[in-house]
Amino acid sequence: MSIFLSSLPLWLSFLLVVIIPTIVFTSGLVVVRRLFSLERLTTNNEVAGFKFAVVGVTYAVLLGFAVIVVWEKFRDAEAAVAQEASAVIALDRLSRGMTPPAGAAVREQVINYVQVTLADDWPAMAKAEMSRTPARALNGVYDAVMADAPTTPRGAAIMAEMLYRLDSLTEARRTRLLLATGVVPGVLWSVLFAGAFVTLTFTFFFGLKSLGTQIIMTGMLATLIFMALYVAIEIDHPFTGPVSVGPEALRYALENINQPD
Image (cartoon, rainbow, N blue to C red; front, side):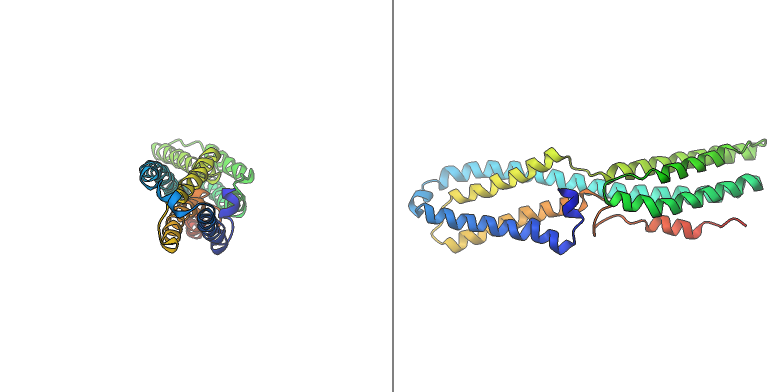
């Protein structure tokens, strides 16, 4: 459900996640006020107010924790793409210190890896899926690097640094593929939406003389809760939808890689 909502245009997901649920709960309050008299509801204010404070604080902590975790993972996805792009540029620079045939082969494989990643990985990650083609292209980079057999200390140092950069690239790619599948597990989404239902339904048990004031208060609370859920949904899949991590860093890296002669 979260990947479906995050893949929609922002206005449509905002309508489905924030506006319509808010209207539903404020309408529910009106229905309750018509079914139960104000005097009957007013008698619950003191006891219900104490219990609502506990429910509200508990849900606020849970919702705030979910939003913070999702935001941190979104930043991790951005950092992973930047790390991958840095490793690509470093591999290209280091390959120029290798013997001509080996260096040219490494540059060719690095360029192929970036091109395949841009063409296949991002569309797949947008659907929370994984493409096998970039993995094979990455194996080609490894094969090209390992095909070189340095015989000098300088060559050995370059080889060690290239292997380190390859490991960094592989780690960054693994991180973004993992984050592309989503951060918040399904069971937590169930708890978050159930908690929103319980918290907002609790407001129905209060009775204020002014129904309009109570509707506004309930609407404001519902809007706040659903906007927090909206933010979490939009960035739960860092590579899906309008709010996502793009491949600009890798495109920039590809533009800066020296093409083989």
